[in-house]
Structure formats: structure tokens, C-alpha cells
Image 1 (tube, rainbow, N blue to C red):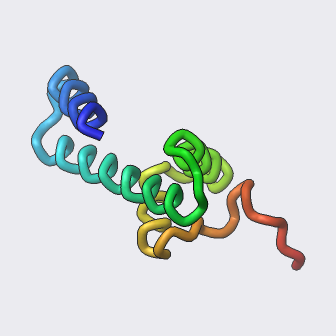
Image 2: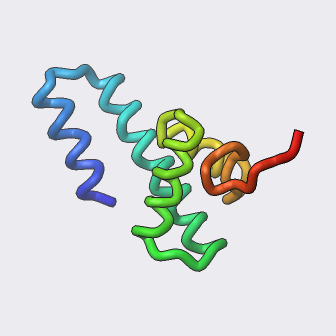
Length: 91
């Protein structure tokens, strides 16, 4: 996790981003980490499997992975509906 924070900081400095952008990046990274942890615990997944699930779901919904992570946290570990990992609904 610390390596992820360092990576965000190094990239921000290299691009000359301001402190607000850096904080936003760190917050997004922290939320992704929380969501990965929740998915690991609740579904018996490895860290890699949980992150991959988030990533695929993000692509399926066509929204940023940080936004999917936020929804997972708000829903206490449940993925938002509509991604490729969800069964098709009739209607």
C-alpha cells in the first residue's frame, strides 16, 4: 500500500501537480485499497483477484475504478449492479 502512495506522489511531482491533486489521488488510492480489502474478506479472494474484479467491473460499467471502489465501500462490500460480473436482468 505504501508503494502505491509513493507512486502517486512521485507521478504528481514529476507532472508538477499541486497538493490538492495529490490529495485527491491519495484518497482514490486509499478507497481502492479499502474496496479491495472488503472484497477479499467477504468473498475469500486474493488481493490480485479482488483488484481484478474491481477493474473488470469498472470496465463493464465504463466508470473510473475509484468510483467503483467508492460504491463498494458505501454498499459495505457489494459491487454495484450493471457490470460484466453481474447476471443479466430481464426487462
